[in-house]
Image (cartoon, rainbow, N blue to C red; front, top):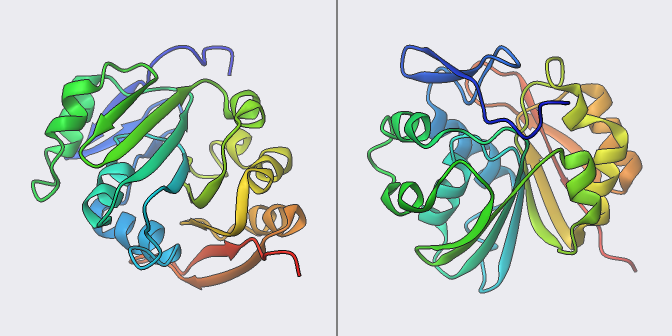
Length: 220
């Protein structure tokens, strides 16, 4: 990722944004909001686990859809940190989020400049850390209660799914913390299991056969 400081290059497949760098859509061609709700909220047992100070961490901020879905679902203040190598330009983000009028995207769009930062958006504290997660995540000092592992397809963006990064995910997970991801790729599941998660598969969203979820068991 020698061009990691550059923003995202976005093309469009109808109303769905596609990352030209990875030739992969940012979310399901069927319904991105339903997919995000099913995979990332449902896969992490949210909103039931929300409590004040709950911390969601995400690999791949993309359009901000994961954040806004969590914001809508959470009944209390929470933190949301996302690691993003190629931040999306504001105009593309606005176009993408315009497909989901049920989400209140205005406050996010008001602060989003296509760069990293920390903002208060509604009742959430949002931090977006720009750069290669293989460098930025190991240096991060926080802890996740839930992970949204939302990088592009492991076949097209293998750097975001390699074993050392999955170990960094585990190293920054609180006891009883969880992860959810749309992918059920065997090497990803094995890497997360080797890192310390109890990993299982469940039915995927839409036409996708399986997805993966896991929990970091608390020490006995």
